[in-house]
Length: 93
Image 1 (spheres, rainbow, N blue to C red):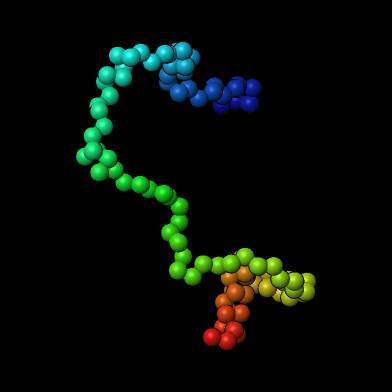
Image 2 (spheres, one colour):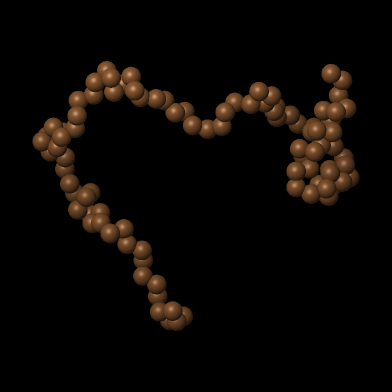
């Protein structure tokens, strides 16, 4: 492709204007099956998201000197996790 040639916009392959203009007719509702108690019984509820942690973390605010923070940051990504692990080993059980 040359620099002067523009790429065409991707196409969805459908006529969205025609779809937007469509008005649902009563006969179209007749195509839908009636919901039965059996259908509801088979249904499941998926709330999504992460499962709850057995040991959830709690957000706190702590003031540390800049040199302490910089030394931990210098250890690379995951420094906050390593700091928390070190503090948990020091804390009384």
